[in-house]
Length: 570
Image (cartoon, rainbow, N blue to C red):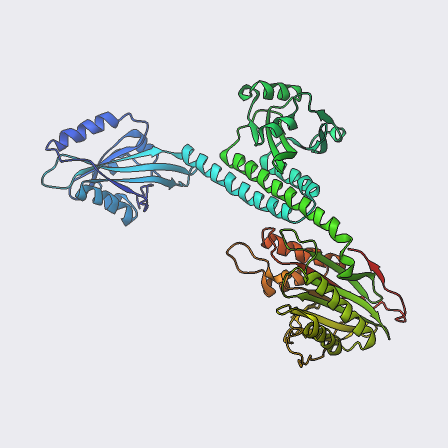
């Protein structure tokens, strides 16, 4: 019968010098055995040149997989007692080197019980001069410590995963109120709170804007600044407030917890320009122990939401100003017979309200639509005015002679004749037959649009033409493509591929094509926003260039071609 010893060698051992040998080996062995006979932890001794098993205490015998009478085991050499050579070598190594060996954490999984964890010690007993040391083996049960650590690690991993999803939620919208409402639900689940709320700062105090797990009648509840309140508490301290029980609370915290029947609470302030603009509150009916992972997550949540509020309010201020000015740069219809349309412009982070990009959709004769997109290469004070001039020039030429190469040649001549030195531009123009889907196009150094077709790999159209004004004699090549019913065409400026994380590669054409493919079935009006959010998330909200995106999906539902295109404001 194969005899098995449950403790196997690991590579996590440590060596400890236990000092000089002693001549009284037998007496020491007997003393050790007497001392450890009644110990609560397993202990055993191996002795002699063959490392024979000479003694074990009762606790050791209790944990053997193969329970047999003690007299059958005593006298057996370690290589026979142990089923694997590596574990036997651990004993022999300690015996012949005189150095103690430690396995801090050994996993023991018997067939008849639950998995346990042990700290194993191989301790030479000093005393012999003419042979190997006796080896005392002990095993200390560290199961509870290891399981507690594993639970903490699992909780940390889960919280990190959940916080990653919460960060994605925050980045997925530029509406601060929407972001907080969505995060409230997700964070309540992560923290395991019983109920939660959002309070918003008002001139005279605070008001509950949303609740989760609490009666909806609480929405609209107001708190003045004249007395203590939960949101005011977090706002005044300007940090996360974590109270695990009423007994741990200070007088103000205790008053509020007893007033609202709260057993434990986390209050997370959302800061804007150095003041609390909102507070998220997470509450428990009974006391709770907040782990380091939960406290760290709540601090990061405060920072993430504060940045989201800063970005959202800055974005809203920019957007409000842009709406009155951008009609000169961005013209797109709400509806085109035969096409669905979606469009977006976002200026570079840091605040310019008008940039260098432009796009346009115009109704041409014979049931066609002309589509233009472009960008002035340099950001200068006169770049916006020059972008408006190029857009106007391309539109007027499209009405006169809509051949794409002719439209770009006219725009290139404008640049060559009137642009200040160093002020170049790129552009793309196409003419689409709305009845047949035939598309003629030409490119002047502009990033190639992406054509997404169901069941096929996305196609990036050619971008090999010279830039506008690059050469007065430059020739632009007209090409053709087919826009089938259901196909999606995505046009964009360089900013849509230039965004990058710190010290990372740009978003690039490959990620843009993937983002376009992910929108293959989305309505055209939603496509630019979806692509932009992918870019915005990748760049951690920092965009150094303007971004313009125009999406067209052919529906095939055309009329005579004489309809007037109704323009939509951004």
